[in-house]
Structures are given as structure tokens and as C-alpha cells.
Image (tube, rainbow over all chains, first blue to last red; front, side, top):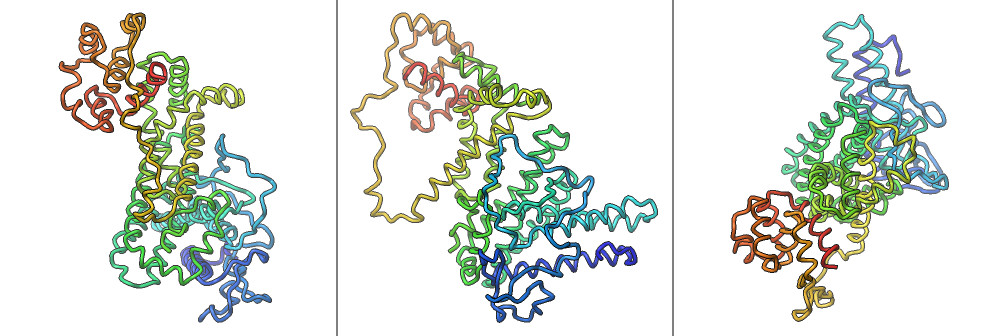
Length: 305
Length: 232
């Protein structure tokens, strides 16, 4: 459905954005208001907490304990079972494992994918592949090519975020990958732009708890994206890729901006503590991959409570 | 072979053999920015340490690697499969360095987690005072024997100046030898200058690094090695 050739490419771009936006809104709502049911390996939310949302269209289905978030229908490329995704040449490469990395133990408990990171990753990879295919066609005119290239940058940034969420929340894609230098460049540029915009806004948050929660969500997304970017850099560095020095400098720039954002967030810590009235930080903590759970990021580790 | 791996192996070998090696210092100076970058990346992966702790972790990372660098040689020759070693473009030091610092970061993180979040002033009385007693002999008070004085002639000038200056024992070095070292290192007498003598002990390494035109890491590495060898 997502690769419907009868739909003009610019309409597909709009649809990509709409799908993404809706999925992100649902994810935010779930993280803030649902509770992780470890037995069901899913988020469950009381029906009254769905506000104006029509449950089925936002990926909720009824269960004996409440509305369960399955994200069904939110992602157009999600096949039944474990999703896999098409190759995206130029944007991804086979998963990089550090030589000294501790192998994952087979005894590790499969905690499922309650935050639905995998279908979103699958969706984004599929969108990337479609746009790459369009760009490879000789028949696309210069103006369309330029707009598609811009869209590809957005998608690469989403790909980094989606992959980073898989790492942060301990979900293992079946056909795993690492970002290639090209995707690194797109995603890091977009992350810097986003964080710079946010930095200019943090002093104008006022006393809005919703804005404070949004800042925390942006911070967690930045953290997830950083994980994917760092993995891409580690691969390039280890393999002596020519892009590695530039990637190292860019990553340094990303860290500096993140540090500035953290300073600003720490300055509004009392406001951030409004997250205590929601399930947000507790949900993140419980979702964290085992390797991050003992040493959680500062905003998830009780510093704002 | 990648650029950093041979440098790290050279440092490991020089340290293991305890030989004064100007090249090893240069190699370590080349490695230091990379090591700090690795430490920053590890902090970026967790963002768990408090700002000051994270900053200390990054600035001390070259010293942490220095204290473990001989294990890199062991790992490289004993643990790394020969088939992997044959892939010359690969940066093995980067992988090893990341692992070492990663463990250290987790250690620091555990310590931070174990600390109470806030501590009232009244609690400070329970904290043990680890400072030495005033009348306790200083490990830096030492006398070299006759044969050791003769051996000093063979010393690397930088080693000699660092050890005797930081130990506060430069007056024990024969004047002619001290002058020779000063000339070799382009230092103006009197050395150390009165400002060094007056400055607090914690600032002395930094002062000496500036005076000698080397990084604080070089001072740390040489001081650590010499202290272990001569003052243990």
C-alpha cells in the first residue's frame, strides 16, 4: 500500500509525513499515559485516558485489562509477525559489532517490543527505499529530484531515531544494520538543526507542563539518535573509512549541543518534575535495554523527581 | 595497520620495559586526544554521570588508559585472533580503548549510584579523613645511594627533572648534572623557580608541564612510572 505506484510521489511524501506524525503522536500518548504490562509485553491504557482518540485508528485494541497498544494500522508496511525491511543501499550497512563487544547472552529474556520500535523502523526503511528508487530513475526532473532529496534527509533522520530507539530499548531487529556515512550525515545535520531550534526555545517554556514533557521527549529522542550515530561512527572509525574524521567532528558538535540542552534542562528541573504526574520517566526506565538500566540517563534516573 | 595501533603498541612496550622513551611520550600525546574523544563518546552513550564527574572522567581518560596500556599488548597478541590482526586497516586500539574506558565509566557510574543524593552538613563528621598525618614520613623523602647517583648520569633529562622536581628533591642532584639537564631542556636557572616552590602541591604538575612545554599527561605518565620504579 505504501509503495502504491498509482499515487504521485509528492502525495506519497505527504502521506509519509502524515503517517509518521500520527505514529509519533500515538507513541507520545502511550509513553505518557499508558502502563507497561510486563506479562502482556504491551502498553495498556485505561479507555478514559484515550481522550478524543478513536482507539482503533490510533493502534489500540481492547484487552481484559484495558486498551492495549499494538500500533496496528499505524504503520502501512507492517506484515504479520516479525517485520523485516528492504535494503537501503547507501544509507545502511551490515550491523557493526565492536570487536570487544560482549556477545548477547542467549538466555536474555525476550521482552517483546511494547513500544513498537520495530514496525516503525520497518516503515521508515521502506520509505527510504522507495525514495532512493525514485531518485535512481532518470525520468525524475531536477526540481522533483531536489524535493525528494530533501525528503530523503528527513527519512534518514527518522531512520537514525528509529534505529537508536531499538538500541536504547533493547529491541533486536532480525535483519540488523548500522547507518552508513551518508545517513549519518543527513541524520546528524537534522539533529543539530532540531536541537538548535529547541535551545532557542527552552527559555520560553514558561510554566507549561506539556512543554516540559515535550522537552524531555526531545531529549530522549536525541539520546536515541546519538546511539545510532555513534555506532555508525564506530564502524567507520574501526574500518578506517575516509569519512571517519569528519564524522568524529560532527559527533563532537552533536555532543556539545546536547550538553547545552542538558544545562538548560537542569535549569528548569522543577518544571520538568511535572513528568512525575505522568508515567513517562517510569515507562522509559522500564523499557531501557538491560545494559542501560543500571546506569540510566540522568533525566530517567530520578534527577528530576 | 591503522595509525593508532602501532603507536599504542609502542607505548605499551616502552612502559612494560620501564625504559625512558621520549617516543612513547610523543606517541601518548598523539593518542591522548583520541582517548578523550572515546571517553566523550562513552559518556554520550549513557549521559548518566553528573557534569563534573563526566568532565573528570574525560580529562583523566588518558591517564586511565596509560595505567592499563600494557594490557593492550597482551590483548593484541594473545586474545586477538591472528586472522583479525592480519586486517591491517582495522583500528584495534580504538576497540580496546573503548572497552577499557567503558568499564571505567560503568565503575564510576556505580559509585555515583551508590552515593546518597544529598548529604547534610552534619554527615560530614562521619567521612573518614584520608589525608596523611602531619608527622607521617613522606614517600617523597628519599636518599639515593652512591651507585644510584652515578646511574643518574645516564638518565633521560626529562625523567630526572620531573622526578626530582615533583618529589621536591632537586637539591640532592649534583649541581653539574642539574645544570646539564637544564641545558638539555632549555630551562633557565633557577629551576624550579620560586613560583613553583610557592604554588600548592596540586598545581605543581600543571606548572611543571607548562615550564617543560609538555602536556600534563606526559608529566603524569612519567611521574607515575618513575615513582613506581624509584620511590616504591
